[in-house]
Length: 272
Figure (cartoon, rainbow, N blue to C red):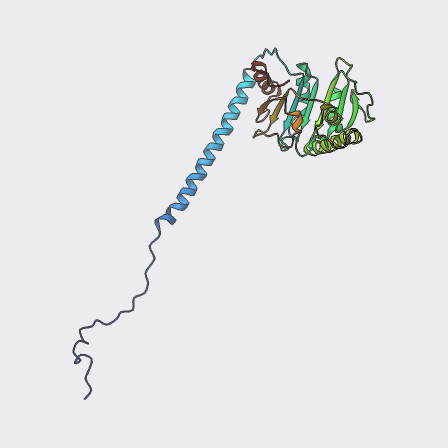
C-alpha cells in the first residue's frame, strides 16, 4: 500500500521550503556619503572663490582710496612685458606704455605667446603715438617702422641707429613664432658668414646675429597673468633679465609701481 509523506519516518520532520521574495537592499554607507562629500567640496570651492574675489576687491579699493607715492631710484632702461593671451584684449596697452614713458623707460618689449599683440602692432602704435610727443619706432621681427602723432609710416627704417629723438620710444613686439623665425634666420646668417671660412662650422651664435631679429634686451621682464609664465619667450633675451609677476592690472600706476619697487629694492643685480 502506498504511504503518505507523514507516515514515512524522518520525512515529516523536515520543514517545507518557503518561497521568500527578496526585500529591499540595504544601502552601502559609501554610496550614501558620496553625494554629501561632493556637496561639501562644492561649497568649499565656492567659499574659496568668494574669498579670493573679496580679497582682490578689497586690495583694489584700498589702493584706489589710499594711493601710495613710490620713490624709485633704480629703474630699468629696457623693460619687457610677457602678457597672458587671455588678457591681451582687456588690458589697455597704451596705459602701460604711457606709464613706462612717465618713468623715463623708453625701450619696451611686448610679448604674448599667440602673437595677438604682434598682429595688432599697427593699431597699438597709432593709438600710443597719438598722445605721445616723440617718435615711436616699432619693430616686429625684422620689420621696423615709425609712428608720429598717429601717423604710421610702414616704410622700413634702414638706419639702425634711429634712436636720436630724446622723447622717442622704441617698441618691440614678440611672440613664440617670431622667436623661432629669428633663431632660424640667425643660424642661416651665421652659417653664411662662417661656412666658407671654416671646414667645420662652430655653432656659437653671437649677439649680433640674434639682435637683427630682436633688438631690445630687457633688464626687467614682468609676467602679467594668473600664473607666472615665460613659455615661448626668446631665451636669449631672458638670460640677463630680472623677473617680476603681476596677476592682473586693476590700476596701472599702482600695480606697475609695486613691480618696479621690487626691482628698485633688489640689492644684487642679476642682469648685465
